[in-house]
Image (cartoon, rainbow, N blue to C red; front, side, top):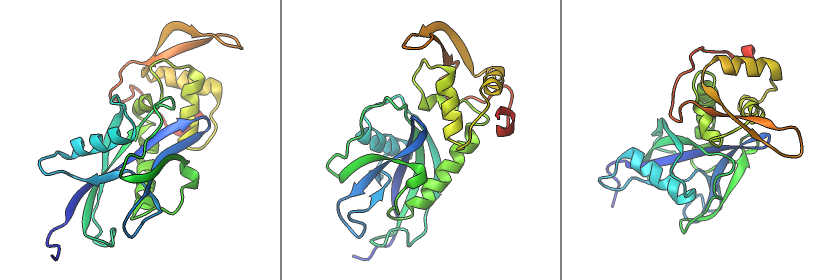
Length: 225
């Protein structure tokens, strides 16, 4: 039967910072015109299901954790984005700490894996465009909010925090200047605890809030360099 109305779907761009790389979770498609190609996880919205619920369902199916930063990104509705049918996709981006559980492909996909965002393959549908929009949003948001909390464990060192702020824009930052400026924002607090290892103990910090909040002092990337 000829399709008379667009189908509603969600796609989720899942980011993490692993070492010195910003990575995104991709899944390999099993069936259809893009069989064998990589894409972001997603699927059709179930009748009676809210968009946010659909995005969280897709996210949980790939990464079995609930305490995740998730934000609606953009709606992509080009009629030709899916050659099989007209699908309008509301996209989201999610942030996970590097220590999160390993991704799982489930029954819908052939594989699932993490890819460096600088070296993404040619993705199915319009997902390379989605990747660019998600990365632009993340780079903008990290400069004036505490959104980085989604990429870090609850307790972290200033070195680990600086690595996140370096990896996302892709530029090194001056250590002393970064620490002074990030403390001035009021986004983080000392825990008065230390991580001990092979080197000298490192002081631990935490975000004052683990929900989205604006910095008390808006800063530019040039302020941190």
